[in-house]
Image (tube, rainbow, N blue to C red; front, side):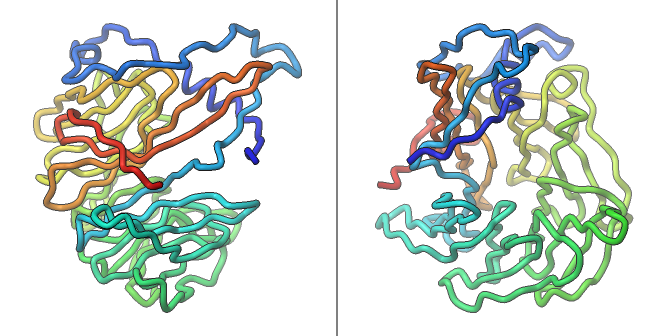
Length: 324
């Protein structure tokens, strides 16, 4: 049974895909073009009219929120919705294809796998950890609301988005056992803390990549006249040298060099596809995404499916990870 929902903003993002010239000049000059595109047809409708919109459905095999085991390049986790407010965290071995369901619950943000063999998850509005063998589920936060946990590189600290009294939102840093060690006066969403001093996060509404220096608590954005200005930044991840950032937008996959301020297009995407949630095994030569696809089914209905894919760091060699 497909899960039914209305999400007109998703359609707006997917339709915001046309490639155009800008000051960076490399926006449309891409290392790798989009793959052969299918299912690009959507009927033209006036979305401003009342009661006229698309009906979106998730495929029953829809998967999301992928992450590498930082200690084993042959293991990943991914998530699958199995009912109302019920999501599974599944461990998958790329070599022998074995699966293990680690946890099922009400998850509100992607789980993150740390180097000390703990996986962080947001259950309800609090942060929990679970051993990567499925044992020792432990609650770490107890007050107000915590979301979007992220390990540091060593896996002995994590940061969360914290909403406290009077809906004051900022970020808190905890040790491995859930004790608060520090805080930041910034709202961070989709943050990546694999560089010990510099944390990055997507500025979805500001078309920028945000940077926070953990050491001195300064925060700034990376601006550019081209793709970042004109496109939403959907997700980010540090490349292994920590001088470059891979990011996704509604047009495709890009990398940004923080030293030269140069943007390189790695791969363009088809109109009805979306690359999300990049993750890299350090040191490694592959980027993992979950890739959404929308297909118009008629009668104003759209089916959303997904798959997990691996790409080389230059955007070449896309390969699907077969889960069945």
